[in-house]
Image 1 (cartoon, one colour):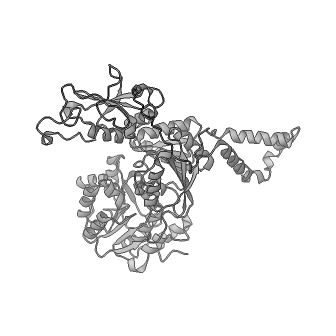
Image 2 (cartoon, one colour):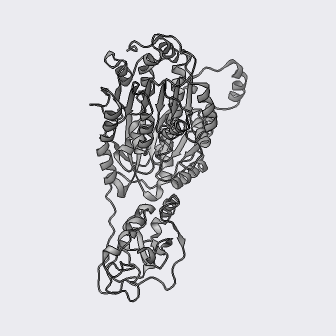
Image 3 (tube, helix red, strand yellow):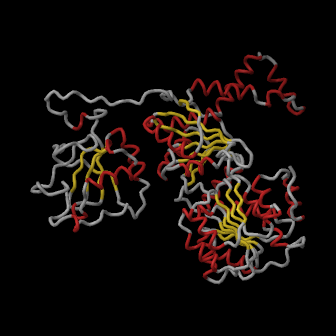
Length: 590
């Protein structure tokens, strides 16, 4: 299907790039009914939105002219939620408007603001930027929007999710009322509709998602794994799939560091993306993926927003996303613009129901399986080797002499064995992991019969090893109470109530115990706690041995005794002072 009537200058750019068939969103914005009007467009990531709004605003910017005039105050401003997306939009619009002589300037947080200011002073036809940096230039008088004809809000739902509403309103209020406003969003939620009513005039509503299956070009797989063997399980998934480029999502920065280091140690060419990296480091990591210098990117959700890597064929959710929207956003890094992709969810057996609810909410269906075994990986390697086109190539004239020397005095079996050995040597070794079938029953912890004998000491619980102790910087002075301490520990440490053992609350800190099985995961999670949150650090076991029980065990573990002399006070340890709950201070915000 050829492109609808497009501005001649942009048509030349499309022809040079080999764009023959428009995507649904590109065809919709070029419809006659949408010409010159405000647009409210819902389209998923990877659907060709950047080229779509580049085509949609061409007539408004160029009119009947083949080329732009001298660059001055910008004629169009594109606002994107993240640095990576803003840079991607800049790259796309640069080639699209190159035949028309368009000058594109980017204003992105984390980059040199003085260099951007000089570029704006020299003039631009189109400015692309993130909300914060654009607001900064506008407030300082560097961004003159008096001649503005078009503004584009790209992925507006993400900008609101990231808290940029004030910046958006500041920019939109400063723009001429006569401009066109093109708003693109994956979903048209209540806040997006409110923004559209306030800043758009009689907008044409374009919905390319109605009746469409979510990410139809993505094959979803759910892999049941042992939670204690997450990294070996991810290694086997990567080896079995053998994607040219893969993105692995983790929940925390610490987990990103741990996962990426483990993959590099096993022979993968891997880079990491997290919020702690500077913009130059992030740019280098993404460039190495695009150039094929690395084939695995380990990232957090926020760090991966707006990334577009054309060769990305596999997405692995090393930790389950928090909600269906995050699941779809992560998965949308692959299967873009008509390409096929695979999405794998690593599902610990205890989280299977949660994974099923996530996929139900996202309206997707996955194929369930266990972690690929070493034998399955070797069989997959053999299929790929036998199907490699290099085996059917003719011998190049320059190599014929060396080929003759290799064949002379060696059997075909020897040459094939040597080829196989060299082929395997460049591949990371498969891991030996516990294979759990999807229909395996969840393990049930047996409770011993109570025969009146005394309960065994704390050290004999679980694996037979004592748990690890940690300290939290809140105590009786902050009215510490297990009622809110336990949920806080679970949230910050990624553990369950049953993983928390004894708790002792002192005046200025709280000591608590984590079961041996959950200690490593707990350490990884607390390492990513932001500075303004409650701080947790490793601690030594308190003197005096395990505390006696003072009531029903919480989470299957005994707690510390009440404060001496505190019997009868509500709330147990460090409960509210006499005088009722009205004098209780709020717990610190985590």
